[in-house]
Length: 320
Image 1 (cartoon, rainbow, N blue to C red):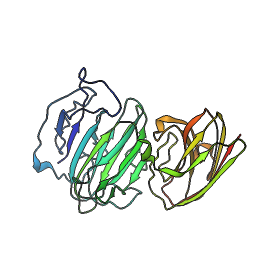
Image 2: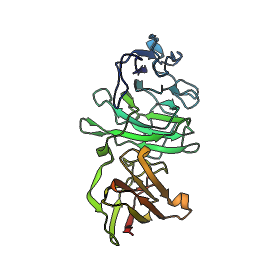
Image 3: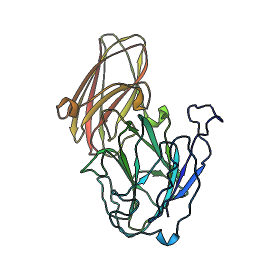
Image 4: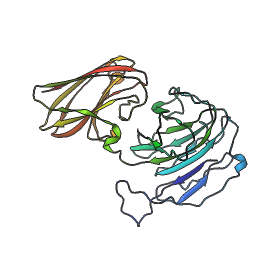
């Protein structure tokens, strides 16, 4: 059984603000064989339907509700979803083994937004393998925005976020191990807290004519920071202090599987990005260079990678 709960904002009762979320006012079963009662628009509310539990364990066939060709539609509001997965799966990904059944959700925002997925450890029986692809349901069709099976640290659920562009389609796959089990997660469409990008302890301070150098190696896997230029892999997220306006040049050379991406922004959210560049956009594999003029203030410099593979980098920052 899958259930989808939508948190709709009641017009006239609240003043919209950061983090504002009303109680769920819509609940619909999405068992195989039952259509989703689509009162899913912002500000709408609807009733609830209860499906037949005998349909809770559909055959793993393409076309079932929860497959790539018949995904479960998520609203463009905060929502909660839960389900039970049993049996063999249809799809595989490049971030860990998950041979059990999957549920595929589809999300199409009307404007660019931060999307955070938060799994409830108390209601999730397994470590979910979660994959998010833009404009396609799998790696062969879409651009990977999230791909990880590293969700739980003890009893604490991780928060994973990605940037969703307006009027693009995102397929969110919740994959299970062979043993299957129950899962539950929240979809949050709210600004991302600064600390969720994992700020590096080393702060970069502007110094006229000065420079900063850093090197690091990563074991591969999903990172925390997203970017308008991509960057699914692990990153270092440096605080950059600019007492005065000035020109900053950042140069990154990658080794191994590190596909460098450079991003300057005001906060963790990619929506605050000033500029970004990657080796793919520059058509220079393993090398990225970005020169940007910044006003006085606090910024963040993200050294990210387009790859989930292990690798390392060297960073050189110069101030003019």
